Image 1 (cartoon, rainbow, N blue to C red):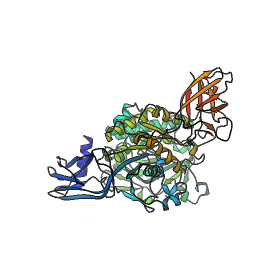
Image 2 (spheres, rainbow, N blue to C red):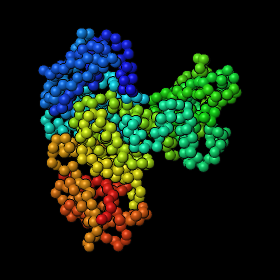
Image 3 (cartoon, helix red, strand yellow):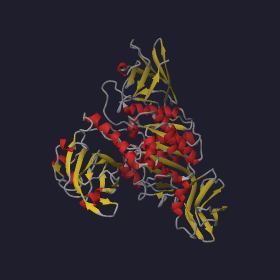
Image 4 (cartoon, rainbow, N blue to C red):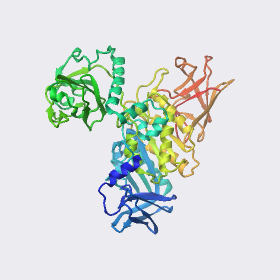
Length: 637
């Protein structure tokens, strides 16, 4: 079993060592109140371990792999307490533990964005001093199988010195909950910028929802070289579709068709001293030709290119041998036997950089071919470059750390085991915009994965609807961001233990990372109180249905506090009436009336109502909390 293999790796060499607590049970941590408390760790195989937390005790025998686990009775909020695991070989302990509520916050960069980068960060940081609010950040890590341990986890009490690097959205949410619930609260930040949702669920769940990459991912486990070749063929299809190159005329088959110049230095291209590259984001081909002897060419080899920022697809003699998305991981690609040949060989690297530094990090000494017999051929000199006039980002492989199958789940979520939680706040989706298939299905599968792991089929999930980002719409458009928001809405509508936090009015058109995380935190906390604490306060207006009447089309809403109002106008902005085709959509006049919006019938065919259907719509419909009406598309009955 995969989990057992991971445990054995962790325990290798443990011998007769003293028992350990899993690192998540560290000093200053928070344990979930009101539910049995699972505690686990390691010890010598067959050794009895006695565990105490306050007056509660339990014991277990370490199994053949050295893993032990006990369950302590549920406890009310309180503390501080000391957790101790003892055996004949020694003991381990964690002190200053509180019992309260634990919230897990996860997603991509908008959940990852730190308090220090949020609005009003200086004042909020300086005033952060709450010994009963504890925070823990899970470091970025990936794994090819579910892990049991994340080394080095450390809980901290919130102080001006600790809160600045913590997730802003998560902190502002739990700060609100501390103020309303008056119990200890722990917050776990577990995020990675730029990640697709499939990276955050187990492999079986990704396969079950029919992800089209599942077979390619399975091939990579059996035969990495064949998988790289298959993905290279897909990459080639993408290239030809974007350039018009005929098969055989692509750069990896006919590189002399490009215009080449010497690479000035094996460092990021912004550091070349060339003004054309001073702030260049885009795609560049890199080429190196190397002459090999027959003895060298007859061997398999490893191609080392150092760190590349940020996405590469690498070819040797026209064969795709590797790819990776990372601005910090070195590239070491296997070159299978038969790819190299005696004489001149060509290495061609396509590099795409979306922001910040780009290209090879260097130094030149990191570039080499290492052959199976241990001999090394340096290849750090004589590289050439050619700018590719393709603006779209290339496809990414299903084994990609940030976009691929399960690697982040296996490294950053699975090791949390069934640690007790009150709920989850999830802010992700930007990286899934425009992808085929149903995001609602993917989100539902991810939620189901986590509920199984944490042992709570009713585990509350708070979903952030994507904030504004991108162009305004001066006429109705088909928006990938709006479509993703609608998928988020539909997923939440299917799940009575989920709530939606609208962020569409909190975004920045020119910044994908809006700074107003304080209001987002308040909205998340409102949803948390409704789902986890029995609050009867509505979490915000939600479209119910639309009907055609003699006086026009009436859209009804649930969850409205007071009445709906159109801010700064006597009509509702960003409303559309649509027929059955995208081209039929047109802006419409609507008036807020109590808990409804009445739209004038323009006499043209209309089967749908849309609201806020753009990347950055200008919306103005709020209730009296005030909370915004989120984007939606609804059929007209």
